[in-house]
Amino acid sequence: MNTLNTYKPNKHFKLITLEMIDKIAALEIPENNKFNFCKISLAQAIVNPLKVSYIKQDKIKSLMEHAKVILPLSPTAEQRNKYFNACSLEKFANHIFNKEGITSDQLKEFNDIVKKTKERANATLIKDFKRFTALEIPEIYHINNGTDSKTYEGYHIGQHNDINASCMQGKPKKWFEIYTDIEESQAVEMATLIQRNEIVARALVWFDVPADEVGKNVIDSKKIYIDRIYTKTQEHRAETQTEIYFQILKQYKVQTETTEEISTPSGAIEKLVLPNCYNACNIIEKVKARLNTTKEIKLHSYCNIDIETNSDSYDYYPYLDSLQYFNTYDQRLTADEEHGSDVLKLETTNGQANAVMCSCDQCSADMEEDDSIYIETEDMRVCDDCAIYCDDRDEYILTDDAVYNNNTNQYLYRPDLDL
Ligand SMILES: [Zn+2]
Image (cartoon, rainbow, N blue to C red; front, side, top):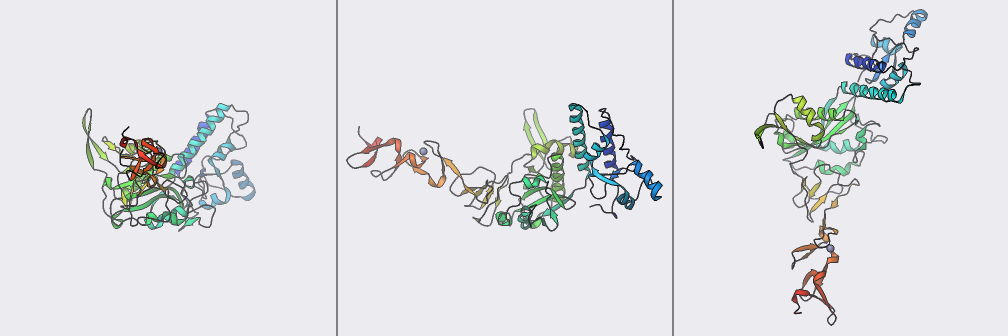
C-alpha cells in the first residue's frame, strides 16, 4: 500500500491518464475551460493507486500569491498530500470535458475510452501471490463482506469484488471440511493474488503429490490441476487469470518443459504439456503469447486426477466446480460422471450433497439409484411404476409383462402363460 513514506509516482499511470485525455479530445468533445490542470505534476494518488492526483493551475497561482507556497514541478509526497486533489479516472475525465450537448456516439466513445483506461490502470497494479493451505481454505471461503468475519489474517474481499458472487463465498466453515481431509498422498491448496490486502483472484489447486512436497519439489505438469479462477472484476479478467496461472506455475515449481508427441492428420507434432485449468478457454491464447514459444501447447479444461479423501461422509458439502462426483465407496472425488448408490453429486449451494439420479430403463423417469428395481427377466433397472411383484416367480417383473389373475389376486408373467 502506498503511504507518504513509500509513495513513488508510477510513470505508466501518468502516461495512460494523459493518453485518455488526448483520445477524448480527439473526439472533439469540448474542454471545460475552468479545469486547467497542471499536466506536469499529474500523478497517481497516494491514498489509492487507481486515482489521479492533480492540482489546478489557478490553485498553484493562488498558493503562490496568498500563502507564499511555491510548488516545484515534481512535488514531494508531503506537498502532494497537502495541496493536491485526488479523484477517479472517470471523475477526472468528467472534470476536464464538457459533455453537455455531445452526441450519443461521442458519449459512447467517451465511456469506452474511460473504461479501457481503467482496465489499463488496474493492470499496472502489483499483485502479490499468496498460497493458503488446505486448513485455511474454509477460512477464505468464510470471509464475508458485511459481517463480523470480514477478514482472515488481515486479508479481505471488498464489497465490489466479484469473488463475492461465487456461490460458496461467505458460507460456514463447516461446509468446507472435505478440503481439509484429503488423503496424505495428495493435496489441495488455495492460490490467490493479493492487492493491498484484498484478495483479487483465487483458485483451488489440486495436487497428485503429498502435501509436504507441494511447493518444495518440482512437480510434473500432469499432477496438478488449477480449478476455476475467480477474479475481482470482469474487466481484464483473462489477463488476471493468466497472471495467477503463471504465478502458480512458478510458485509450485511446475515442470513446463515436458513435451508430448501428438499425432495429427498432417503428421506428429510436439506439444508442450501445461497443467490443465478450468478456465483453459479464457487463457490459452494469452498463455501462448506469454510463453513466447514456437511449440504448440497442450492445455485443457478438464481435470484428469481423482482425489482421495480420508472419510466416506461429511456432515456438509461445498459446491465443487470440477470434482463434482464423490464416490463414498472408495472415498474419491472425481470429475468423471459416475453413477451408483455410493455416488454423491456435489452441485448444490445449500451445504448438502445430492444422490446421483438415474433414469428408468423402461419409462425414462428420473429416480434415485437406491429406489430403482432390478428386473432380472429383462436385465433392466426400472422405477416403481414400471415394476410389479410376481409371486409365482418370486421376483419383480415389468408391469407391461404382468397379467392379473382374478382368481388368485396375483400377477403372472405373460410369457409363462400358455395362451
Ligand atoms: Zn419407469
